[in-house]
Length: 162
Image 1 (cartoon, rainbow, N blue to C red):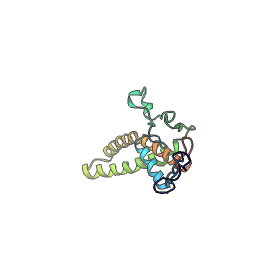
Image 2 (tube, rainbow, N blue to C red):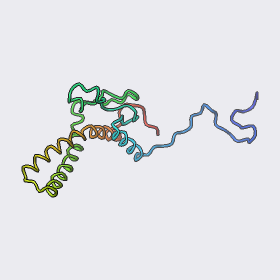
Image 3 (cartoon, one colour):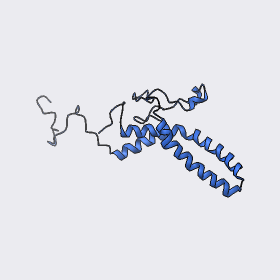
Image 4 (cartoon, helix red, strand yellow):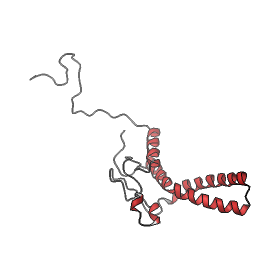
C-alpha cells in the first residue's frame, strides 16, 4: 500500500529488516576453520574453498613426476598452489618424514615380531614399505602443509567469513 512504512508488518507492528539488508554471517572460530582446512586437505582439495583439486587427475599424467606436482591454482577461488621454489620443502621435512619414521619403525618391529627375519631381510622389506608410504602420503602432506600455511598466514582467495 502506498505511504506505508516497509519496515513495519501491517498486522503485527513488528519492525522487519528490509529485504536488501544482508543478514550478518555467524562468526567462524579458529578451531572450526582448522578442521575445515584439514578436511579439505585430506580430500586433496583447495584449502580455501574445498572445491577445486590441488593435484591433476591421474589420466592427465605425462610423467611419473606429475604425481608430486600441484596444479597452478584453484579455478574456483583463485588461491595460488604454486608458491616460491622450496615452498614444500618444509612440508617434506616436518610432516612427511615424521610419518615415514613412525610407519618405518612400526613396520620394522611388526615384521621382526611376526616373521623373525634376518636383519638384512628386515631392512629390504622395510625399505620397500617406507618407499610405498612416502609415495602414498606425499600428496596429503603437501595439502596439509598448504592448509596449515593458509590457517597461519592467509594469502589469496576470497576472504573468510567473519
